[in-house]
Image (cartoon, rainbow, N blue to C red; front, side, top):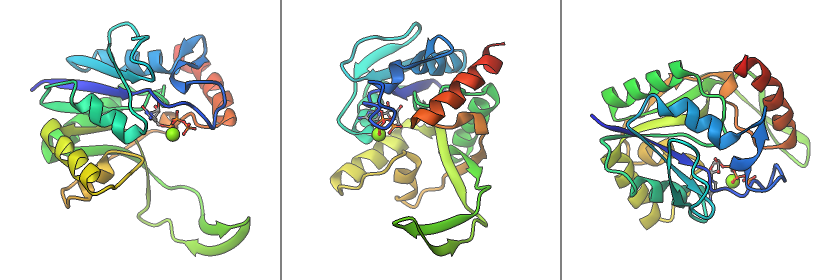
Length: 212
Ligand code: CTP
Ligand code: MG
């Protein structure tokens, strides 16, 4: 059973404000290089999507991304024939091996699996900085990547979403929407997504321990 790692890295990094985010460095390495390095040994091939289809990191093939994350992922899915795909955002540079194993095992059993973390904070719905309705966190998970799928299943989910104009920020949502099971696999706090400048400070600090 062949496995391809697919890495969406074609975003513009608007919230971070330092140019295309995948090429921002922490601890002297780009976010993309860190993600690819963590994936390479676990899969048969790595395909990344960058804004202009160039700058492949070592050990990966590169294609051009799309205008949205979802379009980028659909392009990546069409760039491989592997039986299973593991989709991982370049914006999550610290990927433990244990997580890769667990999410792939989940996909082999159920066809679709994602890493997620049980929510630890108190949750409230708010508008204009005003406290609104309290939301119980019981049973709530924050969804991360990597996510792993049988390739034919996730391709079917993407095609359905495109036909029906449904847009999501991840890929497991598109499978769940077809009423197909998605396995939740316990994630890791180090998998946080580098999104804003304060995340970058956290990433710089974590890189020291990660690389030691
Ligand atoms: N992504 C992509 N193609 C796009 C948009 C996003 O491949 N057209 C990728 C990003 O490179 C990132 C992941 O999807 O690895 C998650 O996206 P996000 O954190 O939103 O990154 P950006 O879109 O780059 O950031 P922003 O939304 O702040 O512009
Ligand atoms: Mg974005």
